[in-house]
Length: 81
Image (tube, rainbow, N blue to C red; front, side, top):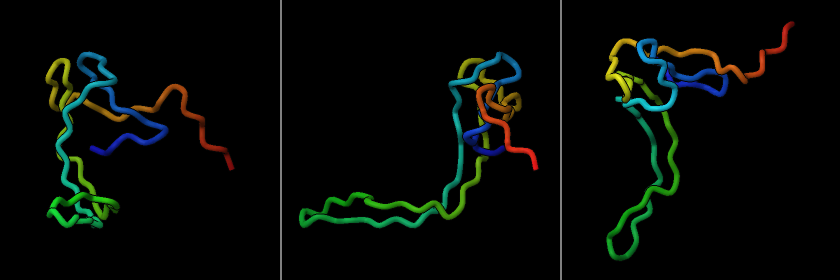
């Protein structure tokens, strides 16, 4: 399963949900962390090096293998060459 793009979105084939999903993913990233003098750290920059979507579950019907990536109806079509 992949993350949606500007031209695609997730849709549950079981109930039709387009907006609510539980996503389990693994992210490998490089972060710039600033630690203040009190010892509190905060991430100020984050670069995603790799990302894997492991599982997408529909929040409405709990469908596990029912979520698919579909085109957005308002997405502009790629220019033909």
